Amino acid sequence: MSTPLIRVSSACDEMTQAGGPIAVAQLAAQQHCSTRQLQRDFAEILGITPRQFGQALRTDHTRTALRSADSVLDAAFSSGYGSVRGFYEEAARRLGMTPSDYAAGAPEQVLLWSVTATSVGDVIAVATPRGLASVRIGEAAHLEGEMRLEFPNAQLERDDAAMSDVMSALGALAAGVDAPELPVDVHGTAFQARVWSALREIPSGETRTYSQVADAIGSATSVRAVARACATNRVALAIPCHRVVRTDGSLAGYRWGLAVKASLLASESA
Image (tube, rainbow, N blue to C red; front, side, top):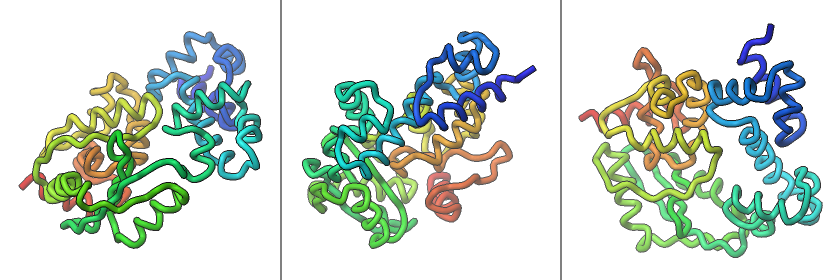
């Protein structure tokens, strides 16, 4: 008899091969269970619905298709959308801009950015009118190159004056000092959004285990999914994924390096 984990894993594999969502009834039939059972399995293990998982896959496929297709129409069909209108409505909502803009490297998007030196390395931040879209830690020259690769045709404007308050706040966070909560403009699945929101509730100077974060969002069995959501956080410091540790208190992986994570936690504890 299949277990919930096997059913979810198999259903995810099916959608991965399809490149997008598959009707829950069809997935359930393939797993020899009811639609209600499969939906419950997804909620308990991943904290999202089968459709949300499929939509996340389609979003990733859409990004790739938009960069390689000759036209938005080609991308619509290759991404599996039933109509061009549906493609625009869904993809625009998930990508944060119209598909044509994204395919062209966001030529109409004005993104402000700035960089500052901190105790844990250079911090580069990119902001939209709605909030921080990216915060990276490392070497400024390398980080700037990554930023420009994502939006090669965007109006990327370095504006240290306009970003001064933001960069001061990020510098304070890097030094372990409390700072005003910064608005963010990041997009992910419903589950990722719940995790990122929970991370922002962890007070400076404290840590939580992955299990505790899973409990906090009402999905106790989704520990691995919580870890993945932490790993996909694109806004360092503002969403403090560095405050999540293993059950024994040891440091798990951190995108910007364990030395940076240790330094951040030490500064906050002090």
